[in-house]
Length: 379
Ligand SMILES: [Zn+2]
Ligand SMILES: [Zn+2]
Image (cartoon, rainbow, N blue to C red; front, side, top):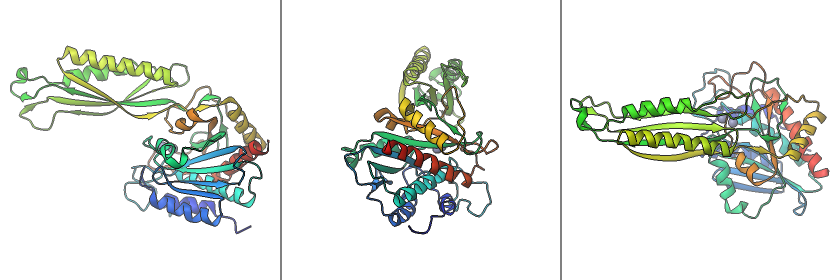
């Protein structure tokens, strides 16, 4: 057995060197250096771009477990001034993916010291979670084609919950999310003669107001419907021109994929009707999709058992979380469970500029993952 890893120091090193979705080359190199010393039984690099897959155990015929973390940081300037602050201007780890990577690496160390006798464990360091493309690109990698996983697991840290407490749900864990880009094409004219053009401004106003009226933003209840305006673009800053074109960018989210399709149709109908009324051409594009994470009952029970057996508290939660998570693509394909791990009740929220993953949480995540994985493989 080699010297134990200093996972807090490793987490801080990752925190200081954040990279955005799809660019995580250096981050992957830092992880690769640590992983190699742990001598995994299999190792894939550049998976779906910058991803890594480290395998522990040699039993190809037995049960296959995959545990995932994310590599990417965000385009948010860090306001903290502690020693391990981001050295890259305008970028920082504000979702705690640095901590998730440290947890997975701690799990790698445990599996390296005591290799699974039956089955195998695959640790996935996934790129580009924040823009919703990473899980898809990993699954599309030709080297993933013939792989099957019997169980997939992931966690996300949860500010607002007691440190080390766990939120495990059966069914949906996160919302279904989609983005809609509505383009309205009219006709420019002289600003003095708006009657000779078709200005989309009023239609934009109607679409904004109408889409907000479709909401039921009560996360404590069934039937969540959230429509968020993220960007509007109308005309240009040329004071002689009456605007002729506009774009409205919205995100829509619901608890289930079926409810999301319904809400999207209503938004699209609103856009088409409004455009028709104002004699505008309309084009609607969907992007940035996150499928809801669907936790399988037995997988959720396994994680609950792991939480209890490692002395952690379970916090009930009646409804899923409103954010999207591309781990939903894995749970759509394989049985699995994504769960939440409390980061502290007073901890600053995810994506806040002063957020920093709490190092004290690392051993809790490692312990719960290890218990779940060994329980599953050893039966
Ligand atoms: Zn995030
Ligand atoms: Zn995240």
